[in-house]
Image (cartoon, rainbow, N blue to C red; front, side):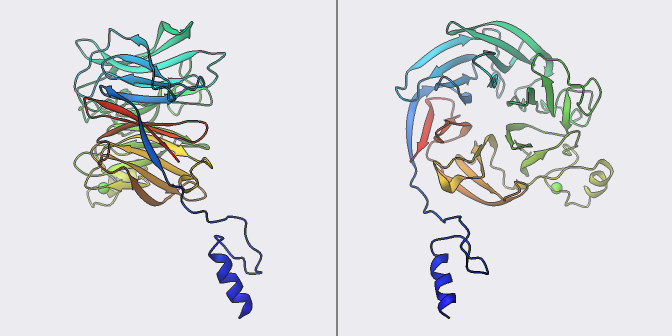
Length: 361
Ligand SMILES: [Ca+2]
């Protein structure tokens, strides 16, 4: 009895009590209290925010502007306006990523829409003496439209991943010879990696509608994706897999879906949402700074107008719980990034007086 009581007592402080009464060393810490602070306001449709190695937040605005923000002083340093960008509905200057070895390779990769026949392209700029120049186009002629342009960028192991939407033409995501409705993978010079799933083809996965979030967790790639009137999704992206759009929405759970799913080995989402919430920016939090967020995906929601925590299991293959933050506090949220310390930054997408907000403790 005494042993049992001792164990129960310890459970109040520690997550697990082993059968031999030795305590496993995972303390259940109380949640730290979070506070949020508007770092800057008055922006118009910021889309991507990145925490740079210079301790500035680099961000795009859909109209074509790239800027750096000092999160301590709120000073904005404009870097470049890309005159070629044409903002049209959801399209414009969208994704951006910095080279992972930025000090030795000061390259900035951006995704934007342009031209009267409206296309998307991926361009690499070089950052020298405080300004961006020497644009090199790495990929061009990505179908674009006023809706569903994807454009989230990610670099992992010297490969550039690019999400593309269906650009409102639903016949293209199942066509591996079209650049739309895909997650693409390129070498950092724009060439096609020899180990891509389809020879001489930038397609890494297909059957996507409009993925707008992309993050690597260890060796696993996750994306967020806008569904139609139902079935927003989080997917684990695997080489060469078909994610079903437009034949499949969400899980392979309708009688009309099962044969397509079987024939095409369709990958099902980890989680889906109906009614839809419009998921966009996605990050992975594993810092000790905010312990209750460790091993979680963090998701910026547009329609849902909140920040969502998606807690992962230890193997990072399942979402075990979700929790909402800042519901209707800042409006629609588009992008998310983190500082090395573990502070979180989110940007709003309300179309006027947009903000970059810091979440700290
Ligand atoms: Ca379904």
